[in-house]
Length: 205
Image (cartoon, rainbow, N blue to C red):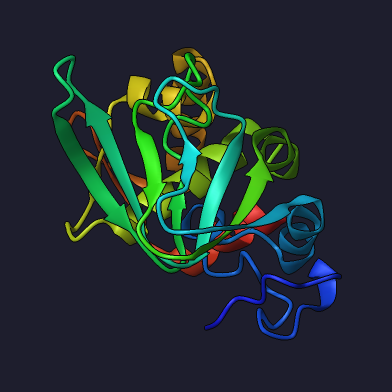
């Protein structure tokens, strides 16, 4: 799907078919109304090849959605050697660290092509998924969609750092999700989602 960088009204962008963030995995399960509200608050920017989206150590304040283009994530050694973390492309999302305690980028991002991006503020995402239990549920959906394994393996500390909650809050709400049958515990740190539709409905309500 081609992104329209000249969109004047995000709510009626024909090229994006009114759904600039519809396919973003982290927001999977969020209601259409909440998605559109995030879209209205987002910033659309165009970058050229060689432009930096951000530097390693910059403060993380937004989720970066790459609607079209390619972005390289790298860190650099003291002697200048580059370590490539990964290449992100159309509809990929740079968000890891958005909810972490330090909230600074652990890498730099440089555009390999002309790149169209949307920046969704962290505070807007937190407001859209205000209930801790729903934020955790949305995160588990996100991780499950990215996993090729039959279940997700995550420590409570990892979940807490990713969604900006205390470990004890995560533990309490994980127990609630398990007790309601929305997720299943697998071993010490594994989770399985038995019914995606049901968990999506829970996040949307």
